Image (tube, rainbow, N blue to C red; front, side, top):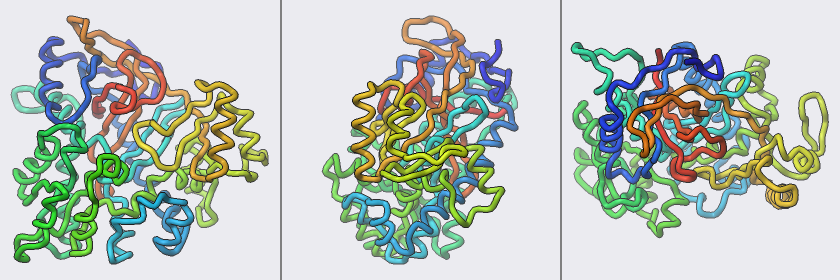
Amino acid sequence: MTTTHPWFGTHHLPPAAPADTIRDLLRTGIRDTGWPYQPFLPAAPIAIPRASYAELFRATAALLDLIRRTALESAPTTADRLAAYRMPESEHQLFLPDQFLEERYADCVTRPDIVIGPDGPQFLEFNVSGALGGPVETHCRLEVWRTLYSDDGGRVPFDTTSPFATRADMFRHLSQELGVKPRIAIVGSTRDQGVTSTRYFDIEVDYFTAHGLTARFFEPEDLHEAWDCPPHLRYPLGLRNFTIPDWQELGIDTTPVQTALDQGCLLVGTQTSTFLSSKLTMGLLSEGRPWMTAAEQALVARYLPWTRVLSDRKTTWGDRNVDLVPFAVEHKDTLVLKEGLGMSGKQVILGHETSEEDWEAAIHRAATTATSVVQKYVEPQTCTLSMIADDTDEPYPTQVAPVLGPLLFGGRPAGLFTRFFGDGRRGIVSVMGTNSSDNCAVAI
């Protein structure tokens, strides 16, 4: 059994248990977290060569540094950046009083979305936010695979990193750097998860507590208890496990969070992470910045597909100078249109799946606001993975085209989250948005 693309290697982990056992363990592990029901489940982790696994984290760290520099140099102050990025009014909040701290801790939690194209890894976007998906899900999947593949000595035939172990180390380092006690507030809401259970947050709190940290989950209405108390009981650090758009849609007041920030609680990633996550930043970086070295330019050319902030202007395509809007209209089948801010693939239009009339209208509409990018479409390559469907009794091999999400916490690898269509389809991959399947990848 071989894979379609050599980057994935040729080694595949066989299922370690009957289909019913794997199915029950995976669904029990992720229960009560708000994670959608998936009719197609993996029967094993995705196994990739050590060199391929390491490449993703090496490239992520290097590109994240360039993303951060690009976002921060776009304007000298927060107010100027908000104007430069044309951020919606809802994003003009939740900044720390100290701009240095605000900027320093913006990139603590990162997960890019990567596909393997014909020439190797291509970074489609950077998610820089304490609320990004993957840590809890990867932890739960890894727990199942470790249980199934462990030998009598507790050894498993693969290498990986625990998201929670790396995140705990990140908070220990932050507490030392800031000179505060390692008391960690996990700030979120069960309303955001769509369930009444707090298990999504409790899994991480329990892990931290078992590994020597003091941690507690806070709904926003309870967040005053993190700072309005004796000094030794305060929570000076925490994880901002929510997004402003999600809470705005649910009618959740962010005022308690701003008050906690003003009272000295550092929640990572900070609001400046929104600039790093914006696809406009990828467009600026892809086009090139005057301060980039030749090596940095080569790195960007290798890993970032051609991406441009869409407006009525001239730019380059290879060695050609082009008028961007007419060029984008004419090259529908090779481009993707993405809003600068967006989640779950909801603000993405694939040109080859759109009529010429609708594509042209979308391009002209987006060009008037200059808050979207056009990006070269990357044809995702596939790997072989054993799967389980609701209507099958035994695992079966299929070809899937995964979106790879290396987790980077405090600059350190924290596991590899993956999403794909379990039936082998292609398209916009999102567990929440398009009902795709998820898994984790491990190194062999």
